[in-house]
Image (tube, rainbow, N blue to C red):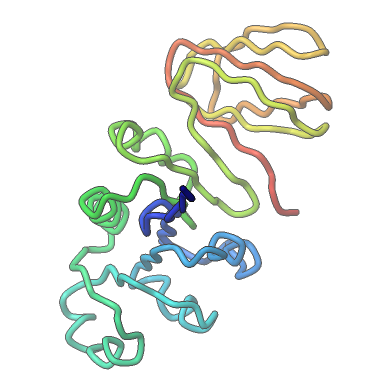
Length: 204
């Protein structure tokens, strides 16, 4: 008996584009390979439309919606969801949770807002694309990863101690506003008593 694996629509990480000031299409393009659900804020819409990508949901004010009804035809099947400028992120995440998505790339979110996402980490697998850096959360208290020789960013609660171990040795340091760490090629292990985020420079 042959078995077929059907990919459930929502298994592909959604893409929520909040701002595009420091984002290039080349950075977003790889995220679109498997035709994910794409949500775009009113603020980023003009730029995203110029990229010619398929949009599923536009997060926008009611006045913007009434002035741009033509988009419903031009981008069919797209839908508007009402959101104010300071609410795009929350509204977009709530929509994704209610529509059974399990993962999302947040494009154009400042990584400093990562710590505000704590309550969503149990519900969604989140990554943040902020300029040339990609951030992902560590919620299990520790992780181990092979890195090329590079500089990584550890972002978490100010003053939280992190333990770092790699071939350079072992050190414990408190997280500060921007804890940048040079890592050698090879495995680096990082442990902390609370959630933290790791940033890697993925574009230069």
